[in-house]
Image 1 (tube, one colour):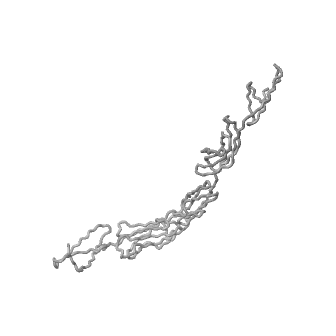
Image 2: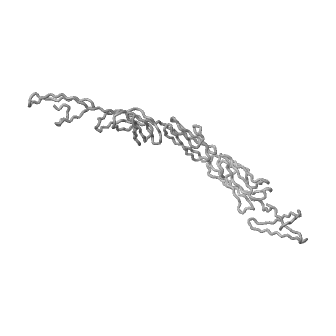
Length: 375
C-alpha cells in the first residue's frame, strides 16, 4: 500500500483474554468498516504491548566464593531476584517459598521468608541479604532453597544456597640447598581454606612463588591467607654452599718407568663435579663427573698441580685452593771394588753406595743376588 494517510484518526483499543499458563494461543484481528468503503482501515500493534505478566529468576550470590556456596564466618550472601521479560515499566511481584535444611535464626539471619517481593518499575533486580552465622559446629552442608511461584513460567525457578563449614587452611614449603650465586625457587603447597589465597613471604614478596638469590643460609617463612581470613604459616631452611676444590699431596715418580703418583682433591658442595686443573700453570686438564670426595687424582707427570675451577653439573662454579707436587729423582750409585788377593781366594768385595730416588731400593745382580753388596 502506498500513499496512505490516516491523519491521527486512531482509537486505542485494549484486548484482554483469560489464558491457561503454558498453553499455545493464536491472535486473530478483523477490521469492520461499514461507513465508507473508500476509506482505508488499518490496525497498529503497539510494540511490547503483549503482556501476560513478567517472569523472574532467583540466584544465590556469594561475593567471596563467586558461587552459591557460603561458608560460615566468611562474609555475607544474597538472593538476587531478576526480571526475565515482561514490561519493565510495571512493578513485578514475585511469590516464592523458602525451604531447605538450614534453619533461620540458627544457621542464618535474613528477612527472607515465604511470601513475595516486588521489583519496582524500571529496575531489573532486587536482592535480599543473608547473614551466615558462624556457629563453630561441624554440621556438613546445609541448604536454603527458594522456589518461585511463577504462573508465567512452566517450570518454577529455584535458587539454592549451600552453607558449608570452612575447610582448615594448610600450607607447606620445602627447604632447599643451593649454590651461592644461583637462584632458588620455592613453590608452596596450599590445601583447604577458601580460594583465592594471598601470600606474604618473609622477604616482603607477595607472589605465589618465592624467587631469590640468597648469599647465605637462612630461614624462609610464608603466611597464606584465604578468602575467609584464615591464615596458615610455614617455614623452611635454605642452605647456601660455596663450591671449592682443595688439592693436596706429594709423590715421587721415576721417569720413564710408568710410575704414577696420587694426589687428593677434596670438594665442598654436592656433586657430581667437573674438575679443571693445571700442571705448572699449563693445561687445562679436565675430569668430568666426579662423584666421590675426597677424590684421588692419579698423576703421571711431574710438576705442581693446582685447581683452576670446579663446576657442579647444575652450573654452580667454584675456585680451587692448595697444590699437589709430583717430583722425580734419578737413582745414582758409586761402587768400590776390592780385588781378590790371589787366585782362588775369596777376599774380594764390592761396596755399592746408592743415592737419589726414593727408598727402599731393589737390587738385581747378574749373578742373581738381590742385596746391596753381593760380595
